[in-house]
Amino acid sequence: MFADNVGSMDDVISVKNLSKSIGNHQVLKNICFSVKKGSTVAIYGPNGAGKTTLFKILSTLWTPTEGSVAINKFDVSTDSSNIRKSIGILSHETFLYNDLTAEENLCFYGQMYGIDNDILDKRIEYFLEKTGITYRATDRVSELSRGMKQRLSIARTLIHEPQVLFLDEPYTGLDQNAVNVFENILKELDSKKTTKLIVSHNIEQSFKLCDRAIILDKGKIVFDDLKKDISDVGSFKQTYKNLINS
Amino acid sequence: MIQSLRIALKDLKSEFRTKQMLNSMLVFSLIVIVIFSISFGNLLNRSQIIGQLAPGVLWISFTFAGTLGLSRSFAAELENGCLDGLKLCSFNWNSIYIGKMLSSTILMITIELIIIPLFIVFFNFNIQGIHGLFIILVLGTIGYISVGTLLSALTVNIRTREILLPVLLLPLIIPILLPAVLATGKLFSGGNITDVFQEIRLLIVYDIIFFVIAQLVFEYAIQD
Image (cartoon, rainbow over all chains, first blue to last red; front, side, top):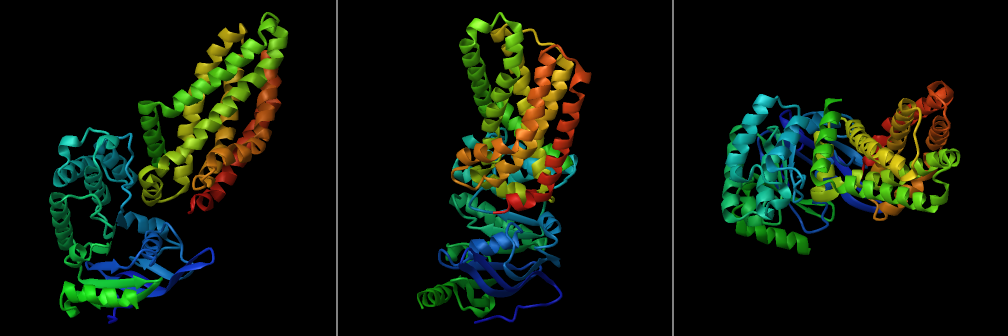
């Protein structure tokens, strides 16, 4: 039930004995795992399991109480600025400015990541087209629907071509067409060896994208295995139910 | 520095497009000026008395209008989780502080430049030493915004931030307000820039102190 995934040379993410306490409550308890370059790991767990806290720490927004977390060999506590350059986060919050247009939002984030204007213009055009929102490029974000905002948020996440992607409930607000677009983009990223971590309650949809599944419950990893060692999504769902109910 | 400029430009673009803060700050300042001009109506032809009252009236109006603007400075970033997005794309979090400080200072000075002519009209008062006044306004505003931006970040995740911000801010800006009001008073009483040199020096020192302290503690202030 636990894959031997801790500590090797080609690890992009390395989490060792990670604990996080908020007030008196210990949200994460002695978490250990590592992720190899180019792999896609899905993290599942009920509400309050610690998934969002884990993502906040991995993305340098929070610091660990104990243990260490390294991304691309940079420690989240001491080298956070180097980590931020190489990660992208797609969250249920879009990180988009309502008073700026779709294009201006992408331009702002692209410039913040230090992308040259010529390259940025091409990337904006490419991602707007890829996510199917070119015709709304000059509309303010406040005028876009939830699904459109999520599509734009996908473009925002990818604008600086991150090496590591954290996807927190990425399917929120997406219609079937947008889900297909999103999954095609993720498949394209496989060829670029982009490492992906997905948190989702939608086991069916996210399980087919991943090559490894982790279940987090009450701040602990209770399951960690490669997809090839799990027979099918049905049996995984049963395992999930059994572990969470126990 | 380039990241700070981009943050400031983004804020100013949003603000000049919606004019949410500008309008509320302007209306607030205007109300203060109008109320004071009505209550001092029988003194408006006595320029010596008005000259003594004017610095207080002006700085009260700027201070409270500025508090309105500062309370929105970081709170606006909470929509759609933009503060997290900003923290993730800012490789050095101090650039967020400088960017926010720049945009708030520009907004505040814009308000001041609109309010001063209106003040001249409502109070029927001829302002002397306009160059000196501009220097005092800029230095006073920078100091005020330095402290205010830090406190705005510190209180952004607190539910009662609109109440807490002025409570924390007003006592802290007394060292800036005192020389600013005194210098404005001297200029309005016919003094020139050499007469307010001591106050200008004090304002510069306070601006530097507050800016450096804010730079040192901002990363801790903005952490969740």
